[in-house]
Amino acid sequence: MAPSAASTGARPADLRTSPRPVASRAGRAMTAPDFVVVGAASRDLDATDPRGWRLGGGVTYSSRLLSQLGLSVGALIGLDAAAAQAHELDGLRALGVTTEEVALDRGPVFDNQQTPWGRVQIAHGRSDPLTPKALPAAWHDSRAFLLNPVAGEIGEAWAEGLPANALVGLGYQGLLRVLSPGRVVGSRPLVPGPLSLRADLAALSNEDVRAGAPPLRRLLRRDGQRLVVTEGARGAMHMERRAGRFHLRYVPAVRARVGGDATGAGDTFLAAWLAATLLLQGTSTGGTDPRSLALAALCASLLVEARTIEPAELLVRSRLLKPPDSQR
Image (cartoon, rainbow, N blue to C red; front, side, top):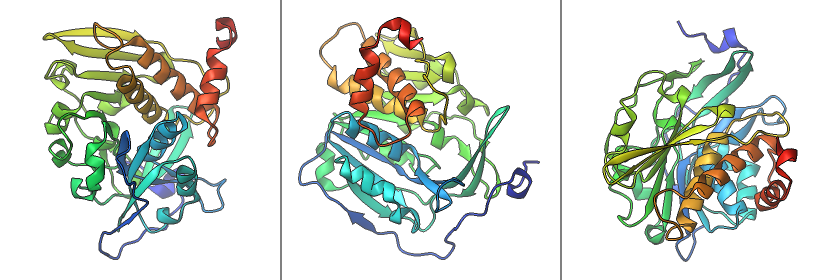
């Protein structure tokens, strides 16, 4: 039986249980941003924060990084009543992120406990769904979309809800979680569907497939699709389908100079990879440009080193300018 919140030391979350209509509150862009990130923001319990939590979720980490890299970003972000007041949202907007906020009756809440055996994640709240109808009309002209669910809030309808010519990235992790309030987050098997077919780039970790997954080739059902399977400090495996054949590449991790909380590192990897892929389109032949994967690995490492809203482009430059021996 999965341990309860009490048995793991989790603190109760301030959850809304009464229903209320889902509405949007926007900082709408007059023109389409280059990148649109979609997902619900989570409240991650944190005893060091006066609120008892901090704002998390892939949509938060990804949109922040993309904007720090100097890109035009729109975030379609689901928020419960407490999360909607988070100061982190002001930080995103200060970086230039245009936020389209969707009010959720239920928003995801997690307690991420670090143990000698790795992270144990306790769920305290599920999420209402985010549907393609919430996407501002002007954003349909965006060049790239990153679907980054944290609690199953993004459904298969998104496969048909995005423009056919857009580059689409998908984070699998949030689609594979089983959430029971007060219990350890479980895993569900990965079953390919319309979202898997629509995604041009996708990412998951070795932990995400504990409940089972098909052979990886079944996740790449058309030419041009790419998948990365990450394994923390051990690096990642990149797989790409070209002309009906599958090509594998090892992606070494960039070791963080200081240890820290790795929450959000996978989201950061995917966002940087998607951004570099879009910006490098047409500059190389023969499939994935290895520079896009190198940037992704570096940005994931930087998140661990500095969990602040510090200009990521300056951090990247400082690391790239250091002699190789100094980065080991």
